[in-house]
Image (tube, rainbow, N blue to C red; front, top):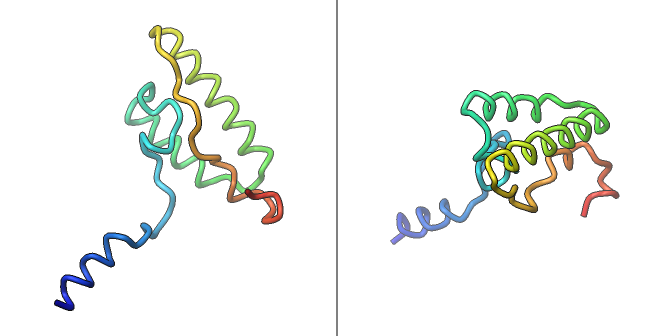
Length: 93
């Protein structure tokens, strides 16, 4: 019985470790090559300044919009704010 409870609890626990880019949290994932996905994830983890992160995020979104339009598709809305970790705690939602 204890094993069942521990297994169930472990599945509900949030994932630990560094943030990972995925199709669930990255706008334009489907328009990126595997190499670009790895590079994107590394860039996001490397930012130390909010302004640099925001500039990259805006450029990335523009590029993904262009790629989507080039394929006659739409870029999904929403997604995660990749720069949130650099914002002052008071400015976070």
